[in-house]
Image (cartoon, rainbow, N blue to C red; front, side, top):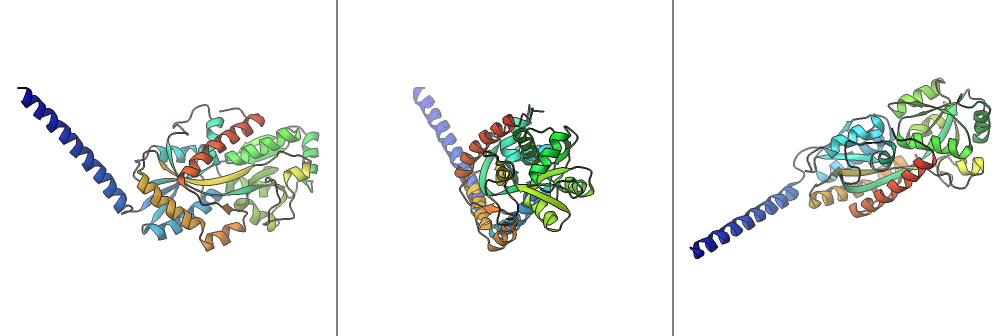
Length: 330
């Protein structure tokens, strides 16, 4: 009887080990074959936004490396939350990825009272794409020539000066400026950067702070007036614009928007590594470097582990910026 029970136990253990081995083998085979069908990349902002432009360029180059198409889908709304949530709830098989930003993977945790996903655990980092500063600009009919004059005008007309935003970086940069300059402005939210730009050009709002991809063509085309950049150093793309610190005599103003790629948590490591290799190849692509460096974009190829560490640091940084800008969670 005892031998029968022992044999039964050994048989059960053997079956479990075989099952585990088969599961590992299947997972390894899946990673080996990956990708064998098109990949979907969700951009959590509107078509024409910086995230969209950069995401599509990277997706095209990555598709060349991986040998499968990467289909970009725009899913905008709530500062990127809707698109990020869709990826967080997708199967962790490498066929749905997120073109993430400082909004979706750093700031939303502090801007929203409740997220439909856990920002810290819902995603598997793939790799860092790059960063870009923002430009503070006004409608051409606003009677100011520089940022100091704009601040003086806003101080003389509390709450009467309006500013647009369609993303976290746009909102926080403007609220930080208001807080540090001691002015009160009225916020006008938009669903997309291009829509906000249309209204800035048309004079429906006075001021808009957005990334170079949206701003630079309009500033150089004379359709709006650039006042300053949000980095700590002047940009080579438009060196005539001072930094906010220079323009207002500040020391600690800085806001940089960044872009990175994520997969749903639980995506196999082998698949993450393949995506990271393709992403880094895109980040080093001459065409991408030439196209986006003119817009102030700086690439920074790195490992998934480096992105994980950066995400933690950026989350803390944005929490501090949001707190100091006195933005209340919604």
